Length: 359
Image (cartoon, rainbow, N blue to C red; front, side, top):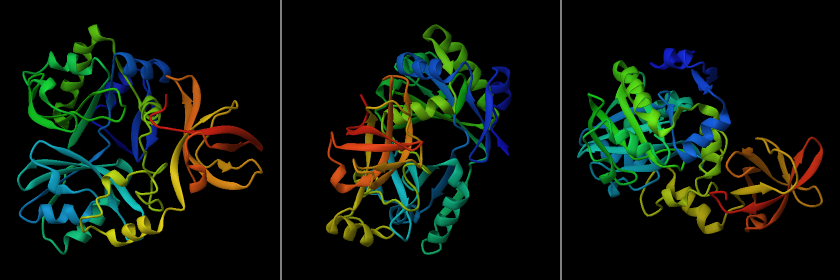
């Protein structure tokens, strides 16, 4: 099992460590609830160094990424970031990812930890027709996500870069806590605001310590994977392996906004046809009306108990105090306020389709 450069920091803080995507990662420190609420109301810091980073450069870099991903890379310029996905040849999703344009012919792709090898192989195979220079730096880069309404203010005490001038889904490269060449990225997976900081492994501990110290007056807590999951689900953000995978199309997952069908990318013809014919199912958010926690794999049924879909993510929302979930349902049940039922331990518990983010 792999570890991040910050493992000893987590152990020193008493973190409960678990296996996740082939890495030993902190699940929680003080507990899921205080960590979740700290991010929503103050600030929290996550070690997400398990994520993968691929550098793609050269005159052919644009053409490769434009063909390999579903979004329009032509909308990027140096300093901008794009959310996208890698479509497969069957209409599903190899992975979802972020595309950073570092310079005119230089990009960084940030992929999910569980898919690093799969994504690298996929891009390498496609690159046989393009010849871009590819470099897998996943094992040499650490990533700290400092999230919450006070995150920007506390990080500003550590850098001369004006963080308030970096728009959402933009980045700058600068010094932080005396460490040079940190990628300061206005992104996150919590919906609470903040920055993600890419740094060389050898500088990760120093940056972690500096942020922890600077964060004390702001109520910063270290946060683990448990809170990261409840925070992202409250926002309706997809998690690869749960809500999206090789069998779900981006259109079914509500990711049509990153699927630019006026560009030519892998299997775009299939998705154009799927859109013109109409979908059979779609990913929706729902809240439980009866008492019960929906879990991945639970059946979604109609009033008569007929299967109409499947739960992909579910939890008890710490912010809302009620059970929420996301799942795929047949199109006739995708309208807001639609009545559905979740089969939990043999009982049909009532739920309703709602808009995400949940509120």
